[in-house]
Length: 349
Image (cartoon, rainbow, N blue to C red):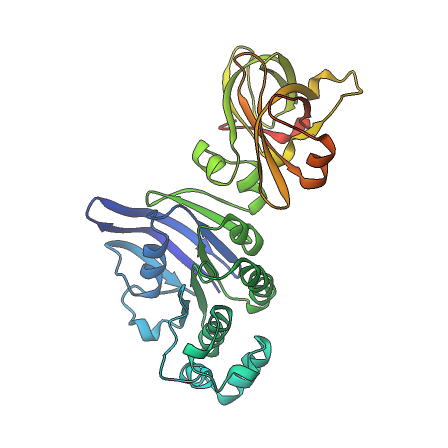
């Protein structure tokens, strides 16, 4: 099954979605972007809630732009589940089910057998979302759309449902579009990720491509790469180049072409920088020395902000809690960092 969007546009006052073109096969496409970028408008246009101003939307070879909402065979799950409050969980699922057997099958799949006789008011947030997903899948949709379905849940419930959804999506064999502003959910669930910005498609690719090879500064920073800075190339070889990072000279791999004297924008994910109390190596092309400016405890890890040399950039590194505690870092301390040659990406190269 295939969903194809070609030059889809929708305007609201000064905001315009598109022109947007993309194809979704039997896969999960995570749509990621800041609030107001057009994610929900995109889902609405596909579902039939919003009529696009122009462009085509084709599902399995047939245009659905003029097809009534209830004839599109599209499942849509909202952030709050949108269950019928006067119906039990069973009745909610039966309302959409193509056969009575689907209620039993989906209740077992989502482990909600014990909840079927309760009304939504007696369900927790995670339970409501399980019932909403069961009701949506009971109609055997040809396309599944999800609009921030986990964002209102507590972190442990959100993590558990995210794991369950991953296995479920892999078994559906239909296009799935998962809209979110949560990067963890986008990368965990998506076979590909589409980044939207101000109604335009900024980049689309696999999670690895988006995280490790962003095309623009916006994509790099939005997906967690704080270390984005301009520098000048002072040495090159067929498969690498060297730049100044404060007082250090670092050599990195490149898949593109850069020239000596060229100003390039490079990005380094904080998770790719390792911190050490001392360096026992002569390979100076991988190491730099910095001063701890500040650090933040983020639960399982610390984010450490370093000043690199006089006039050099500030770099952020994420460090596992046990490593951070063994280093005993405090603001003002000197620490050494290592950056693998493959860890740096040149924007536009």
